[in-house]
Image (cartoon, rainbow, N blue to C red; front, side, top):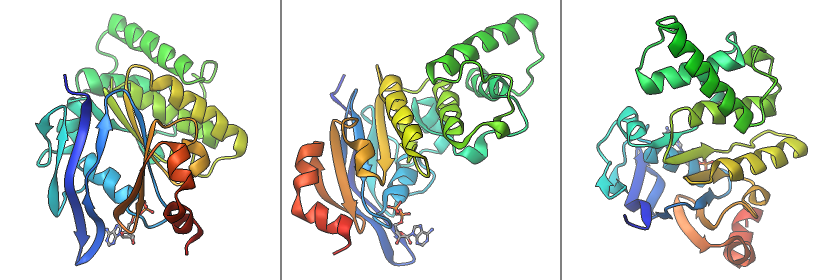
Amino acid sequence: MSDIILETEGLTKEFRGFVAVSDVSLRVRRGAIHGLIGPNGAGKTTCFNLLTKFLQPTRGTIRYEGRDITGMKPAEVARLGLVRSFQISAVFPRLSVLENVRIALQRQRGGSFDFWRSETLLRAYDRRASELLEAVGLAGYEDLTAGELPYGRKRALEIATTLALDPVMMLLDEPTAGMAHEDVDRIVALVKRVAEGRTVLLVEHNLRVVQGLCDTITVLTRGRVLAEGDYASVSRNPEVIAAYLGT
Ligand code: ADP
C-alpha cells in the first residue's frame, strides 16, 4: 500500500476563463491530517469540490488509492471511501438527531430510506447511531430534532453522519466556520479523535484551527500553492504572512 493516499497532478479549474485553481499538485499522506488553507478567494472550496468530484477539472488528474478518479461521479468516489462532510443543509432539521444518523447508515448499507423494514435491523442501526453520536459528543441529544441543535452541535452531527459512511478519507470543509471559541476547541478535539485510523483533509480559513491539528499544511493563494510544510514552517513564511494580511 502506497504511503500517498490522494495525489493531484496539475489540477486546474477555470470558470469562463477565470482560473480559480491553477496547476495544483497535492500529495496527501495516508493517516495524515492535512490542512488546505488560504485567504478568502484562494481556491480552497473549488479544490474541495474538485477532489470530491462535485466539479470537473479543466485540466489535471486526481488519483486516490492509486486509482485515477478524475472522471468519476461523487457517489462513486464516496463508495471508495473518499467522503466529504455533509453540508448543514443536508441534515434533516425536522428529524431527530438519532434519525439523521440512522438515515446516513441506511444509505451506506442499502441506499434505502425504508427504515421500517425490520425491527432487528432498525435496532442495529440505532445502536450504531448511538455509538457514533457518543463519539462526536452528542450523547444525550438523540431525541432533539436536528433543527433544535445549537450551531456547533450541528457541525458535530454533520461529522457523525459522515462517519456513518465509513470513510477511509474524510474531507472536511471549514468545520469551525462561524463558531464561538469554545465550540472551535471542541470541534478541533473532535476532528483529532475521528482522524484516528483515517486520513483527513481539512479545508480551513483559520490558521489557529490547523495549528496543532495538521501534520502538513498546503497554503493556497490565488489558486496556486504558495507554501507547504508543518505549521511552524508555513506560519513563519513571509509570503504566507503577506497573503494573510492581504499585501
Ligand atoms: P475560497 O474557498 O478559498 O474562498 P473559492 O474556491 O470559493 O475560494 O473561489 C476561488 C475563486 O474562484 C474566487 O475568486 C471565486 O470568486 C471564483 N469562483 C468560485 N466558484 C466560481 C464559479 N462557479 N464561477 C465563477 N467564479 C467562481
